[in-house]
Image (cartoon, rainbow, N blue to C red; front, side):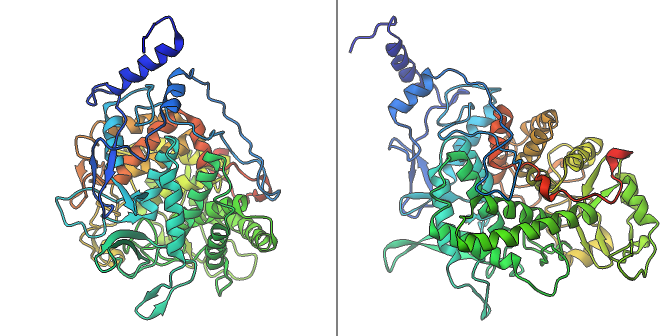
Length: 578
């Protein structure tokens, strides 16, 4: 074949050949080719074709494609008429990030860490019978693997979002189907049967020498530290199913009878009637990202925000058949009660803090102001200095005679993304982060909670947990994975500069420190004393944050606009009226 540079099509072929020969150590990566080992856990780079490899014609089209302007839309036609005004950014099928990822050949604020991060992401992929089904929690082989060689539902979410943003839908679809298959297993812990709809915390691919085939082994809490079943796994599964459907524009997966049944089983568990008088979900310690005893038993903000978001996503995914309509009616009623409860009783700002400080106790009847009989003397000293003049947040827990005033990052960010927080509350949360930057962000984003438990309180609340000492791990440690949640919240509230500043901090150290699981210290200065290196969600959290800043339309996968029908009349003054 003879090339003439006057022919545009020959130019495209020339560019394609040139790209395939770019030095892999340069900022622009060449397409990765990855082989899976027979047991699905170890990946090596080789010359065989990868499952993520694009067709030549698709690559050529990508090269010739002109840059497209970001078109952000604030509405999507919902699958039913019970919700309105959803924040939905268009995410056309096949749309890929402009970063130097394996299927992208343009550059946007290129950083050397991006290529390294994608290479590590590909190596973390787990295969089951030659199909990609997830990513391992960490690839640190220098320490005992424990369960870090497994695929965790909550850990895979940022990995799944990164793959979707880069046009790699197959691994996400396979993950959703495999975890759905595991949900149907009979789950026993010490002769006690768990609810039918419980999703696994994690699963592992192992080789069965008797049958000479690979099998999946799931953990529903029977092997976990503390033997606690994960409450958040089912919620993350529904949220990810909606993200997949929104990104691909393909509703066939969500409409499968198996997926519809899986959602209904999850909803049956969390919508069941019991002795509880609150619309929030009663949970044990260790049921979420904070998977050890940390005093989050009761009604932790992380679970309530995920519960709210999963319910809203389910409304968009459930079919309008007889069974679906029954659940939709139950969901709508619960959402109204839950949004009112959370926005009123979990919200804290300067005005509300002063009201609690002046509470009367032992009040009775419906006219009581101090509905939970919280003792003003239980207010911790630190909260008075922590609360800025303008700003607020959802506190960690509310239950009879108890308010946990700690800040929890994941719950507040999900509250913004799900629109559990009103626009005014979302803005106040961002005001708080800016006002308390040194405490909540410091030198390595981002504090999982603030402040840390210390001394006698630490002994009582954590049970003297040596891993959760002050300013370490779940007890005030800094977790890079939270970058993607902060970035998404920043974009939704119109403050991308906050996310950009946090990402720049992470880029100073994350790669040099080999992508740790978490950091220790008041400002996140030290690598966690027991932190795994090459933690996959630290890597994927960074990638998702970078890609969202590049193309804000990706936010539509993980964000919902406020539903005006669920907006309750706020009975208390809030920070934005100061």
